[in-house]
Image (tube, rainbow, N blue to C red; front, side, top):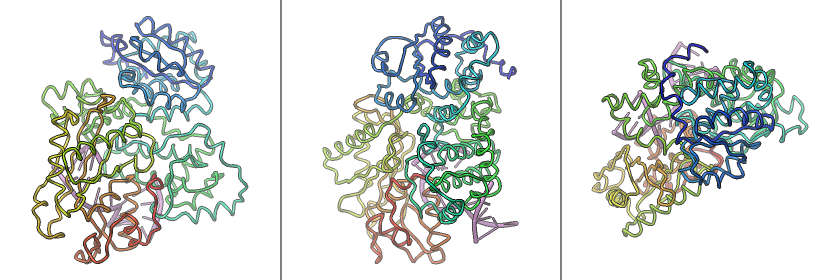
Amino acid sequence: MSKRKRDINSPNNEQPLRGLRILFLVRTPQERIRVTRVLSRRLEELGASLVGSVENLQSWTRSEVASVVVCTDDISHAKTCCNPLPLSAFEGVVDVSWAAGCVQNRQVATIRLLNVSEATQTSIDDCDGGSRGVIDDALDGDDQQETMEAAKWWPPRNLRPRRYLQPSSDMDCEEEASTRQDRIEAAKNIPKYACQRKSHLEACPNERLCEYLNAMADLRAMESHDSRLGDTKYRAYRLASAAIRCFPFRIRSAEEAEYIPYCGGRVKEAIHEYLQTGKLSEVSKLWTEEYFINLWSLLGVHGIGTKTGRELLASGVTSLDLVVQHCLSGKHPSLKLPLVFYNDLNHNLMSRDDAVRIHDYVINVASSLGLSLEFALAGGFRRNKKNGHDVDLLMRHKYLEFGHSSELQVLVRALRASGFIVATFHETIDQRRDRTASPGTFDGPHDMVFCVIRDPQTAVGRRLDLVASRRSEFPFALLAWSGNAIFERQLREYAKEVKGWVFDGHGLWKKENPSECATGTMDTMIETEKDIFCILGLDYLDPSDRNC
DNA sequence: CGGCGTACG
DNA sequence: CGTA
DNA sequence: GCCG
């Protein structure tokens, strides 16, 4: 731990607190008192201020204080309180994970990562006269639940957890009578593919276990030096977690879990450890090891994945500030735009209201331009998620098989001119399709615009993905863009393995005979998602049941 | 022991 | 390689 | 890391 001392003792050690708002969530009253006392003294020395409970959030976020610490007994309550707040309140919301992690572990690493805290750490230690026992005790018990949750507020895109833990969900919803035989039968009855079962957002009886397995998936993806292998292990843990989510009883023994799909030797060991200790010890690496903490923060930049992140760390680029430096000196020029918008895109939860407002705005512009486009909100919000990191907006021409490309072009031009689109990460608008006479003759890419928009109401920058499909391909595009990622992978794996169909966002083809296809234009008329499920021999799944 | 979703830049 |  |  002491080796972390390097390169962080910069002269401006105490500056970053100024102008940075810190949201600090703590659970038990004991913690509140202790942490509040410790931090308030030090924060005040640093020119920050400390405010009481989450209930006065609205009032103090409007004040001019440089920094804020919130203490709360109820994290989910805090989250709901925080969601509607304006951007100005949340420049430091990323610090939720930092704060929770450092309290949990008495660690300096994350604090130093943000250059805030040599001082904060010493003040925590000071409070206990150098021993850490008091904070330890206050944070023992089931608080890891909250720590994990907090650590997941702003994870990187690829490794973003799918579901948020509801406090004490495990305890609330089981103890219905079940014999061991019941449970083994139930385990055996879980279908192999996620597309064959409902995966809703509500907590399950094994919620915490699943969260730990998801965290293990993230860990494996980050620690593997071979990204394919990393993804393979990521997939393995994600699939195990997804299957366990569908197990209706609390798991009592690792042996009975063996009957659940994707729960093999290693997952069984993990379950055993969880049942014994209530956690998976490896997972704590995510918030204790400097390497993972740093990599985690780099992965938050659009364009940095595990490989680039690892390379940056290896070359001494260990913080976002250094990535900016790196970028300014001409390296990785493609990261420049994502870095410019980093704060907006990473420090602000987007609620459903935000997403709907953006959706409506685009539709209004389209109709005022006289365009004949129809739209659908896809992505996580279609799956009924309460919040998300981007808006996925799918569109097609109202009447014509082709014609979406030129209309999208007009739309995007207008959105740019009005200052709604403020930056474009990527754009593909291929007007060849509009000139293609007969359907099915040119299967080019979908038209896509991945951009950053400015919410007209809140002025917050948001990621918006616009996708236009050929009219008949729309149900495939909708299915493909509604996710989630695990559901899509399992659906396509199922289609290939079980039905011999190759399946993507344009249509379905027989594996052996690609000319035998099912699209909206063929005799097997496919007009809705239901038709696709039907042809795949699957019961229809509502989007809200695709959260695997 | 090979395969693991598929398409887009 | 990274993103959806 | 699990499945066929």
